[in-house]
Amino acid sequence: MAGNSLGKEFVLTLFGESHGKCAGVVVDGCPAGLELREADVQRELDKRIPKGSGIVSSRIEEDKVEILSGTFKDRTTGAPIAMIVQNRDVDSRPYELIKDVPRPGHADYPAKVRYGGFNDYRGGGQFSGRMTAALVMAGAVAKKLLAGVGVEVLAYALSIGDVRSRTDLTCEELRASVYENPVRCGDRNAALLMEKSVRQAAESRDSLGGVVRVIAYDVPPGIGDPLFGSLDSELSQALFSIPAVKGVEFGSGFGAAQSKGSQNNDPLTVVKGNVAFRTNNAGGVLGGLSTGQEIVAQVAFKPTPSISRPQMSVDLQSMKETELNLAGRHDPCIVPKAVPVVEAMVSIVLADFMIRSGRILRILK
Image (cartoon, rainbow, N blue to C red):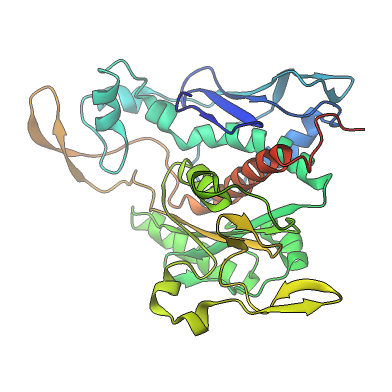
């Protein structure tokens, strides 16, 4: 399978580029009978860019979704679902000036080598964060499928720079507050400090990274397959496919390496006649299978590599070092836009597993 596709039963394939005609996705394997309208997808797309905040790129696309196939009378038919958003607010001139000078922190150089110089270099082409719009469209379908079996996926900005949110946020708090502030943080006090930090980074012509925390609620136990088909390995693959992700951990993650077994193990107990756990250091996954607890992961994003400060690079025509001064429109922090993307990717993988396990039927009534 080519590198632009993900999934085994619920399969998505991306197409388009940052400055091409559109960004799009084909979702194959969606069960027939799911109620799906463009408004359902638009609701998720609208979460992607905190409009009017002043802390994101000045490139603001309308991102009006068009469903081209796969639905009839507002229900899925079982055929592939093709969806696009048009690229309209495009200015490619800055990229023509630096097409032979790779931008530090971007995929420009390895992409030029991989495709022999035929790749679309404008705005990063297919390697751009613009392609996350397609992921969110596919995630909207996955979220509707999961809602039918009582599973919900929520994410929020856990940290931006050195500002960190509370980690004891409830499901209700996340639903109510995450998309009510421009940094997509469920902790209102931390959100104000995060926004201040992003603005300060932008004013100093620099950028910030951060961590997105994602929680999947009410996933039944036993979802996943052994070893190479494990739930956490397929979730990790999907999350690492998001541009700018540099780390993924579940539960206590790397902290487990600094603890003892007596501290890191999650003791079992019985609650109302059902097996339960006293803690969740495993992040809801053991042996690659869901435990029935909340699935909790942290996803680390690097600082936006496009900054307005001079950086050193190489002119590939002359093969000499050169100073690069980037023009164009860039985000001082990727994290706010990444929150709904992380939700989408976790939802896509869970929907795929739930279809494979028979928990989501092939025909929905």
